[in-house]
Image (cartoon, rainbow, N blue to C red; front, side):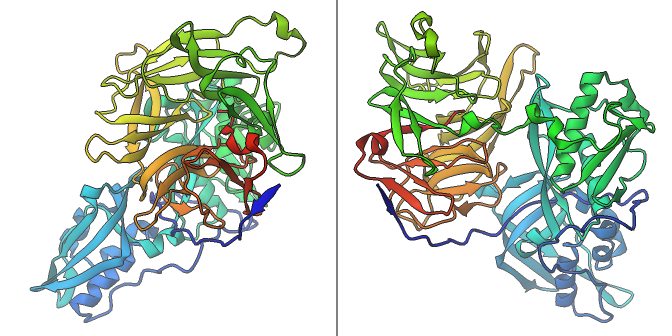
Length: 595
């Protein structure tokens, strides 16, 4: 039996994202039979040169508009500047996105002052970094002087300034794909690139060039590119009838067969997001001799950075501390909760429960012979249940966060969470236990969720300064001394919420449970993995608060939410909320998806 609530679509916040400029050197070669041009998302500002005898305020306004157009190296914007200022200006080093809802340009003596709220800063690679509270305020003075009788700007901005109403029109988020350290799983690395009505050939050239530059600082050396140093495209990427030909130089020819396939996976996954079929050559010969034509996207299912298996869409949970499986959320069958009583984990009273992404094994935090441990065992041993060995265990101390599996069956566990020295360890699929170096700078970890790729980590941390929960991402990478691993590149996503209770990976990035400044209950929000585009989960506003989230990166799951009273709720695919009633088992299960 279900209680369905009224569906009311909520408007999300405008997409806010950063940019990297389109390469302006070298010929861009395109076919006249290309596929459809990319949708620019709206009507943008086309930069115009300054009018003769324009007043200073008009010059400032024109300069701000011209900075939104990066075509031809911001040449139109430079026309609003004095020759000296134009020569010093380096707009490509960063882009500052500011909120045009509260910006003001006011006269100050013979100059003008822009005051606005900074939304983000985007570096020269296109990485989006949300503005921290201490860095929110923008104040820039436009010094005005006359050049040959015409007013011009004689002050030099530190990068380009971009108003928020131009972001979705001028910029596009694009994922570059690199490999995890074990060279098995692709890892997405999002950059924001200038659109400017690029043709498919220009867009493909831009993406491949950015891919060959390697991972951004966000991933650091936690991910690797298979392309050898010096790999480059010989000519700009031509596109005919939606088919791109990537011609690499002979540097890529040194790769062995396995790495040739990996490099192909990086290129094909990167270009697939703009709907291009791909051919790849090295010095004129096919990169993959067995695929001399179009390389099928379907050739790389094992490299999927999400949770690709159907098993990862099954919901599990705890009921009175016992491990369970939940069926029927999608309405295709009757909703039932089934105890996994054939598993060696079932006899234990579990504090928390994690399931591998293949759905074949699980891990619980529990007590064993008076000691707190993590126990790992198969979930359904089948006919051999009686012969199944006891769970493998290892000791943990203090408060233990819910464990998390990655796509290679590595189990990540963070204990001593309330102490001054939290401990993060990974139990590999071979049973080896390794400790990672971590430094949360006094913040207290509340939630740890590993992405399926095993490189990106999602955390909820209680700030030592504000005592409020924050959502942060981090990267698993080799320690600087070359010994072991560390959790580094911690980045606060600056999610505009208070009373944050949980966060989890989702098909669109990250799901966060938190309350807006004007809200009364914690609600489910979507945010991109870099902190951009926060928006309320589409659908009706639930009349209950959100305490925990069950989700993973598989695009086919239905996220499940637990309220502060311990009752579960979820949305159907038509965005209706479902709250089970009359079934204590389903209503009271503590939900968890594989991952």
